Image 1 (cartoon, rainbow, N blue to C red):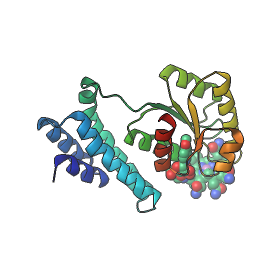
Image 2: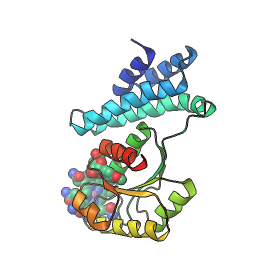
Image 3: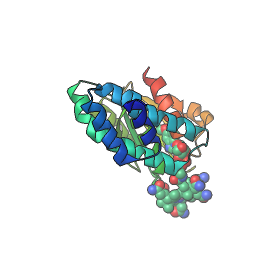
Image 4: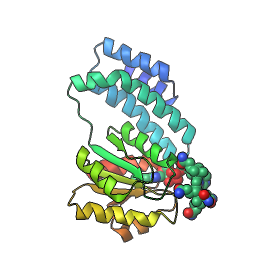
Length: 208
Ligand code: B1M
């Protein structure tokens, strides 16, 4: 089995120390950092994302895979920077104003990182002007807004409006348990994703 395939398998099993060791081994053997990323870490995270969508794995498995990915990235990141490998784009994420739920939003962030995006996390209870400021500061192409309450999902519209008023070209994607495609269309957001893996797919489409 090739070392990138071994990385992919170890990541899917959430074996962080093994991923670290295999990433180092691949680099020592002269495998290009971008290959280690694309055919090892991102490949593994992509498979986990697909399995999550089909309910073949659940939140804990995704979290431990993401932790293994993070551990591998610690070793790989300096090499990627040195090789001039750029992230796909920057995505600003946050939970909408008034809402303190962040477990789903954090999963979305992990999946986005797993798909090759740079993620700037604004945290919870994020007012529209903070989404706009973070997007401006970081040159974000996508703003991801999460809401878990029927009482706070309406605040997503304020984010859409603030982004338009600021003249930003960033696309707004929305998600969270009470959010639907119909609601997304109603508030004029650019896209809705039902789960974290679909959010990464959607972000790819929005920046394409
Ligand atoms: Co809250 N809570 N909660 N809560 N809480 C819910 C959401 C609720 C459904 C429980 C219930 O009544 N059955 C209910 C909402 C009812 C409603 O509005 N319809 C509720 C309530 C009422 C409240 C309080 C008001 C309770 C109170 O104080 N009276 C209060 C509100 C506080 C506030 O936010 N202002 C409150 C507080 C809390 C805790 C702090 C205790 C805690 C949050 C801890 C934390 O997040 N750090 C909490 C929790 C844990 C829940 C439940 C149990 C679990 C939520 C969760 O993390 N799910 C929840 C009931 C439930 O869902 N069973 C509940 C797991 C997570 C992986 O799923 O977040 O849906 P989820 O994310 C998914 C998708 O939705 C999607 O991808 C994720 C992964 O696939 N997704 C996106 C999410 N964001 C996305 C963004 C995207 C795309 C996809 O693009 C940007």
